[in-house]
Image 1 (cartoon, helix red, strand yellow):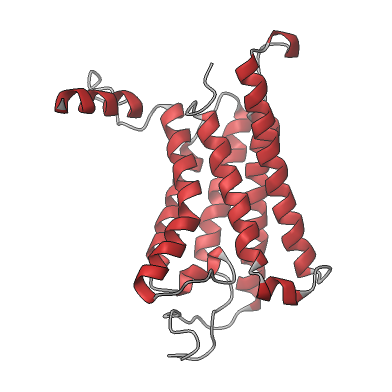
Image 2 (cartoon, rainbow, N blue to C red):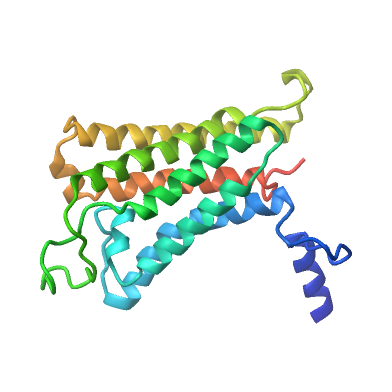
Length: 242
């Protein structure tokens, strides 16, 4: 029974023990699955971890603001892993590699240039979950917004234009490929929608009060990340495999 479960796990992870001079993570399907799982898990991990650590039962202003809490390590580790995996992802064409490379670099820059502080004072009694404060920097804040937007744009481009490619004509594609392409385009459109709503908020086309009352930034970022993760899971042939 144990050997059977171990064999199933090896098959799922595509671990090849016959080649000595190689590492495990060389299969692109496995890489896509890991990227998908990490992406979809991150918002939930951040929310649950801070709830268990601090009892906070509502989301923060944005996913990026978890950088300033006790669960910052989860934010940094998961986003950094996503960045590295996106950087080493090759795809089938040069454009796949370069768009993924840019997305990975932008993700690293999101980590290196955090968003604005949760609070401006130490030991803020109204925000006990905030444990880190950085010197105020408008450049850092706006640069963070810019690279975060570029990160999601790269991912939406991949889902909408690269994942949907095929060496077969539309009439020759199987039903599963057609379903997958609909999913990719839907995920790409949802990411763009989330970016547009956040951009509209930055221009105050959508009143700031809505973003504060309903943490729209957090939910739009979550929508974009969940869409990105789901698209990569499907691309990894976890679902709707031919």
